[in-house]
Image (cartoon, rainbow, N blue to C red; front, side, top):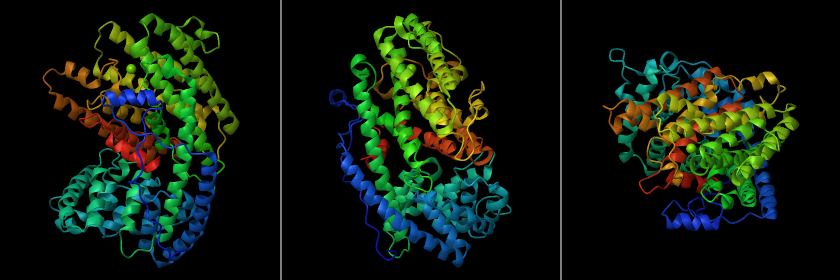
Length: 575
Ligand SMILES: [Mg+2]
């Protein structure tokens, strides 16, 4: 098995897919020149079962093979085992080898003070990702800078592998890390100018790393590119890892297709898009959020706890996200201020009679969100022994209050201060509500019992950074201008506009520059939370990072209002 070449993997020939669940809406989108993707084939259960069995078999075979390889690498030396761990992480199969990776962390500690740029920066990245306290300036980078100027030594500009690792770590800035800012500038400049003389496979890899920096990108997406790069190398000993990565991809893809069918079926049966024609109908795109945010092992030592549960969680979270979009559209496009106020009161009452006096579309929406939220609370109780319904009710009430604030600003022609708008915009992004549901579904961690204390982390008046950072990043990206709010016609303000009103001497470009700076600051805060503070379980922190990573993918519209990177993600991970 070790000597066998890994099957080559192609993702360019797949058909694209509809953003919308309903063919009618897809036709309307096409007429209006909106981004269009073709329908995927439904996956039959028997297909799924057969594929599952086959990929599971391949996966088990590769697991045993790789364990042997890791043992050999360990005895070969620190550099060898660290490079193997890096490949496991880059291929998104590291969760199968948690114990082996943990026991190999000593190798990173040996190499972090190395004089070799590749070794030192890789050791730094692996240690910081694992939560070890390491200082970029003191522990690593000082040795690579000129004592007099403080700039990186020019000789390093020829070390492409070292520069790639330097570029990777440069996005892990926790704030006030000037050496990482310099690292970003130096590595970007010299990698970009090296592309023209590198051999094609490496040049492609470098281009991809510059366009989609490792820490800012979704790992399964990066993994597909890393796999292609490994497959392009003439002499390599990573065949078993490649086999496992391919089996893992296929397994996840099967699972995602099955989940997507279930979410689509739920959405069509719900009939809300027929009842309220103005609501956005993009259930497949909405499913992309939990699909990418919550990716875990499809099969692992924790399969029962993680693999099967994550699949169910993704489906339930997709429903919550769909409802946030529906509620947003009802507030922006359907209800009068008085009706919206009654809608909000009904959500605060939280009982089956509450929606009786509401217009029928609000009643349908209320009944759906009431049912789904109660089901999620019951599911959380079954898995973790604590029913979070009171917290979830409150999260919905906070979201509705946020939408009410926006509606009142609009109705009274008030322009809020940009800061007030952003604070409220964090709430109306729907991220805090969605993460509240996710928090209770995931539980605190896999070993500790779940209790009220853990839940209180979400009950403080201040939204914790693990949630507020991706929410702010989302709101700022959404308001930056390239998105026309996903073809939604509502006018609910924009940070950029309010900032310009407050700063009349600023240009549009100044405002966007300011917003980009705010986004960088949120990333630094999120890095502090995930690498240093670590207030939440690792699954929750990963979800938080992934949500932030997905924002630019979800909101990078081109001039024709297409989401090309999102379409690439869909082709790779879902179709
Ligand atoms: Mg709105």
